[in-house]
Image 1 (cartoon, rainbow, N blue to C red):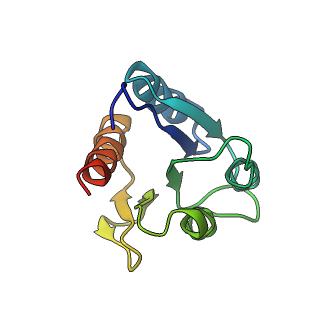
Image 2 (tube, rainbow, N blue to C red):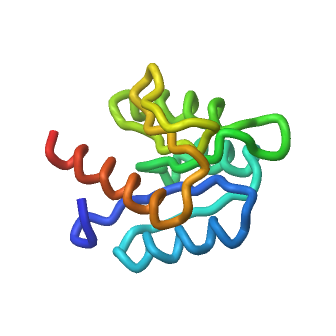
Amino acid sequence: MNAANPQRILIADDNPDFRERLAHCLRARGHDVITAETGERAFLALRDWRRPIDWLYTRATLPGLIDGWILADEYHETHQNRAAVISGAETRISSRGDIVLKQPMPPTAFEAILGALSSASQQ
C-alpha cells in the first residue's frame, strides 16, 4: 500500500506539533490523513461511514472521556485483523496485535505506520 493505493489514516494526538508533523509525512506519501486532538473527535471520525478510516494512530492518553484504547476497540469493530499504532507508556504488542510504542517521536510513529501498511499489503 503506497501512493498508488492511498489509505485514509486517522491521527488522534493532543500534541499539535506531533500531530501535524506526522500528518505531513503521511500526506507526502500520498495518503489521506484526518487529524483529531481529542478522543471524542477521533471517535466521530471512526464512526463516519461516508469516509471510512483505513488505519489508526492514537495516543493512549487523550483529553476527554475517550482514550486511545477505546478508539482502538472501535477501530477493531471494522478492522479486526489490522493493527492500530498506539503511543503508550511502554513498547509492546497488545493482546489484539496493536503496535504500542513508548512515547515515539514523529519519525518513529511514521515508520511504524508504514510498517503496518506494508505488512497488511503482504497478506
